[in-house]
Structure formats: structure tokens, C-alpha cells
Length: 120
Image (cartoon, rainbow, N blue to C red; front, side, top):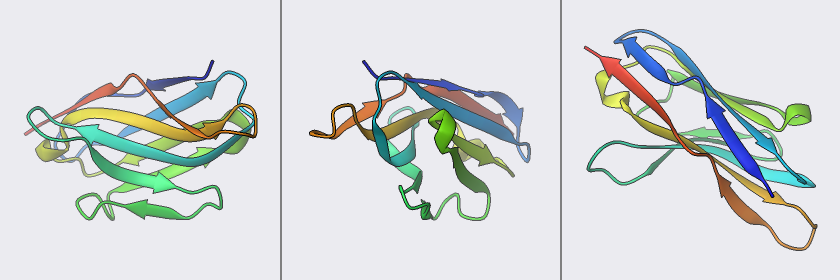
């Protein structure tokens, strides 16, 4: 069974920084893409940042230049460094991995979510 555990959320003032982590455990043979999503109250879940197996990164326009996604492949961990935070960044942040445990099927695995609150 694959589990994703997130950490690093919290309350921060506007302009501050937070670093989220998401570590996967279980019988993972390989991880494809690693992504961060967020969902604010009343809004749909949106893709914030992603990193492919080859290391290519992508970002939502709203976070470009402020957020950085990175990973530690050996630790099956993805990070999201968030700088210059704004109140509109307030949301529950979720990580998602595409992974296989048997080299036959690939599934999406989600973390439980971590709250990020940015005060003005």
C-alpha cells in the first residue's frame, strides 16, 4: 500500500515563506510525475506545480516566480518552496504521485492535504 504524507503547512504572514514536503512510502517500484495541487474553500482543486520523471517542471501562472518544486528521488519525496506568499495562496495543499507498484499498472496516489494560511 502506498501512502503519501505531507508536512510543512501552517500560518504565515503575507510575504513570508513555507516549504511543503510530501514523502511516499510503500512498495513503490517507480514514480512518474509528482504534482502539487491546492483547493481553497468554494473552489475546485487546481494544479499548482509539477515535476516529471525527467525533471521538467511546470507551474500555474499564479505562482510562477514565487514557488519552486523539487524532489529527492532516493527519498521518494517532493517539495514545494513557497516564497512571497499572498493571502490568495491560502488553501489546502495536496501532493499527487503517479506510481507503479508492480510495473503493470500506474495509479495516482494523493496525500491527505496540509493547510496553508496566509494572513494579510
